[in-house]
Length: 192
Image (cartoon, rainbow, N blue to C red; front, side, top):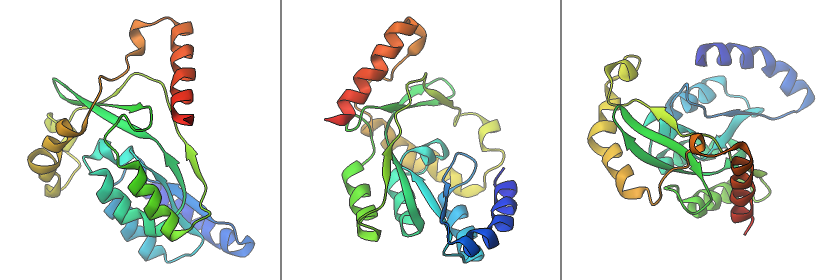
């Protein structure tokens, strides 16, 4: 997926440059922050940067602050959200939670972004869905990663249990009207 994205952006870059349009590529679950930084340096375009999603790289066992430190210098737009994790038999569950109830140091990341650009747009990304299953305890999950991901199992992952403060939402146990009410409640909590 990352190789395809890189090719498409490289084709679009001359058009972005011609019309002076900045493109932010979201750090997504298909590549690590170090890979994204290396590619941006190689591309060397002021018109291609990062749309920083505060929590996406948790699914790749990256500490959110490490992700922010790597990507903030290239960021032109951001999605603020908070995440929490919970253990399950094959790894961990990852879910968006109301701001301040998860494991991400939101204030520090916002300060870092404001230092780069005080006028940067930061939008709220609040998704109410069942938690994502991240099967880090399976060999299949690690098949495409290099050896550096052993750090997740040994150093980063144990800290996640200390970080999480809440039980994750589970939409399977509620009716659609209850789910809609939970969405509204989460949005209200984030607005305060």
